[in-house]
Length: 278
Image (cartoon, rainbow, N blue to C red; front, side, top):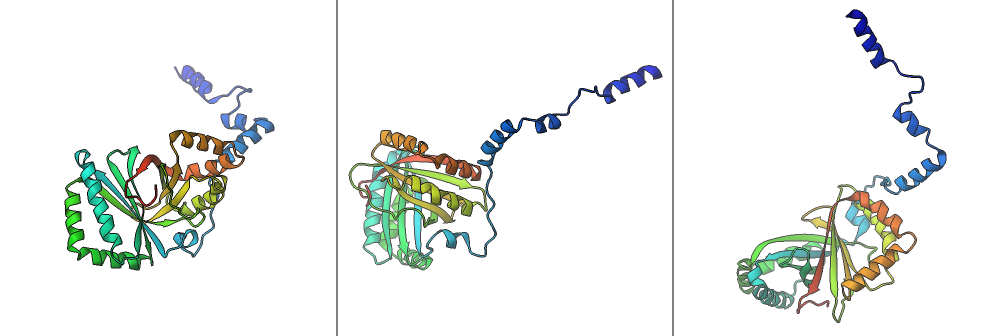
């Protein structure tokens, strides 16, 4: 029995002369193949950002212009009444001297259906938002519209955003268009890295009309980024996006930003009848 056990132990502990561990085999890969793998893998690495004493928002944006993104999930049987109510809400707010204006108003065509998005711009920073909140909370007509609208909603969400400084200035569109909002949830601490890459990436599409707005969150769901694009239709969207991939350098910018993303989704939007941008 002792001799048998000794033989078994020798089988498990001994290695044939030709045995090569997996790690050694990988290290002995030909230099040409290794260079190919390193070139592909290096595009997926997140480049290190040096520490800074400046806030990320100060480096990326003008903090005196705040954007408010309202997201309303509407009861399916109340969409028409809801839009009529919000139209009156816009008229009331714009009739007051509140240093804010509606930039755009949309309903979702593809994505989260029965959803409406409203984008407001405040000049004067958060002081203007504080003043508007106080003023409207005491306005009986505003509160009445708000109470009526609440009965038409399933849920709602509010975010305060800053615009990326490298994004083209928002310009209102006319005619018949669709909009796409691509929303990203980033890994905490990667906003500067995102901005560094997209400051280059936006140049590949700046000559076209489709860039509408680019934002990152200040209050609400943090480390959220929203890119908004404008197209004539879905076919134009397809052709424009495919053309971007044919430009040298676009793929590299995408490769650097993909590792920063934890979650992303997109929605196709249609402007409402009362939206300033169409």
